[in-house]
Length: 223
Image (cartoon, rainbow, N blue to C red; front, side, top):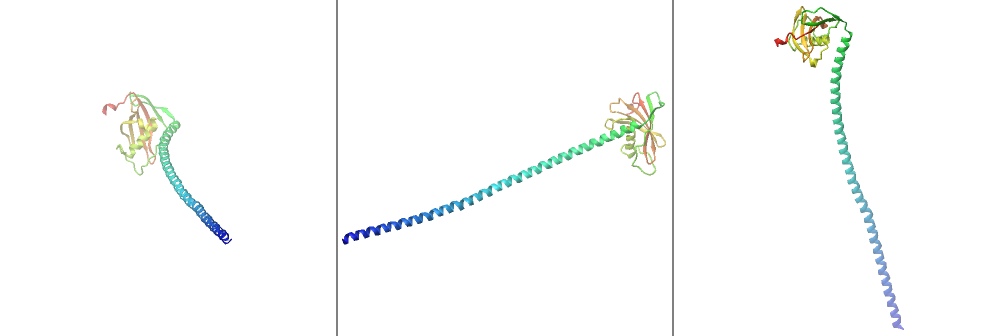
């Protein structure tokens, strides 16, 4: 009887120890599980944050590069537009000068005049206005090629003949009287040859007074 009780007691102790061991294992397992979940959660967030930071940096770099490229393109376009505007302004200035000359010629009343010699095929006068001047004070004619007088003479000659400055050649300019000059000019191909008479008007500039169309360039042989 005592042996049976002893055996039962041993079985109970052994079962109690096994139960306690299993409980400890369960507790340890739960703790490990909690730790793993915590590591997964917090560690994953950290990695995600780093990934997000890297992605944000890449996006920012791409955005900066795009902005720089856009600014460069804008600068190039602006420079191109400036060039185009400059070219357009030059063309407009040339066109405006030609239009002004054409407008002045349209307002001029032309009358037939007496030729000065046999080399003249046609002669005419007109009520041209003086071309204006930048010169002040008493006037003395300056025949130097780059003088203000010569520049203003050329403007008056172009006005009276209708020649284009880019297709224009002066063969001779000389004295034609007191404050007067006579010029022989043509286009570059010499298909149009003119003898032009100019008079100086104080504070107003050179004024065309007569134009003769020549059969041939009588000053070509002297060049």
